[in-house]
Length: 187
Image (cartoon, rainbow, N blue to C red; front, top):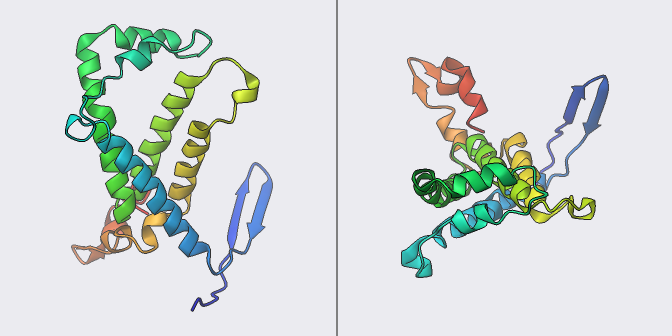
């Protein structure tokens, strides 16, 4: 059974105030969203490993064939032409996807994971840009915004490890009280 606790969402930015009251089921949907996005990233990353897919991941083909209308076409083509950099990219992309997925599913370091997911999706979005305004709102842009929302909701504090990590006692203080900047990574 859900209980209703009076919560408020409120923000002021640039002279504009937004206010609202979330539904009592909001916490369940935030956790579900975190888990689904975590699962998506985990399996996207795992699928890039040869022991799962049968083929090793190689981003060079994608990077070299980005549409010329994309604002990152030149950068991506230069990356694809650099074998040493491609080795780094080919390890980093699947590894970070797996780590982001695990972090979101566990609810640990959620804001850091959400930022990483949003950054990856933004890079995929820019790489997929073909110069058409009708394609402005494609799935990778939507995923980027969803990742940012997960971080903004501090989804790791709801049925997640961040709730406990933040409270770890360090010299008689909670971790985030002792090191307040960790709030940007946790939550």
